[in-house]
Length: 193
Image (cartoon, rainbow, N blue to C red):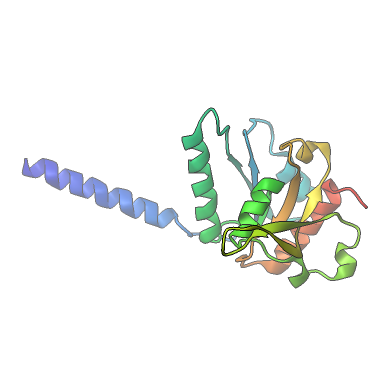
């Protein structure tokens, strides 16, 4: 009996230490880009290859949200994973639906593009702003500061029917590198006004 308790305790300690070493232990792999979509394909990671051709040092991670009706638990797990990655600064750039962008903007996770970009740098793009929920839970407070760039290329835009955009996460440790990567993504996948 004592052996089972000791073994269980050792297993718990090892599991916990394994979890803790995986949290926030970010190596310098360039800009961390996370693409949020319903399903992950087994195709070649096109976005990472395209950005590598543009000399953007990055790692692209895909998170599948799944279908709320078919698997609500899976969707919740994906959203918790995304929140954890943002909290531990494992994401610099987020490519996600406009709906997900609005969720992240409501949680103040998105950087205002005006903090990094000049008006001239953003002039040719379709900028994304949201009506946010105020502290009383009332929707309609206009967040007129742009926090994303709308992506129209069919390869990216077809991922979600609400539309897709690229955003910089507010707690990025690499603002200049993220700016360069966001501009590269926008130039590749956004449509000029």
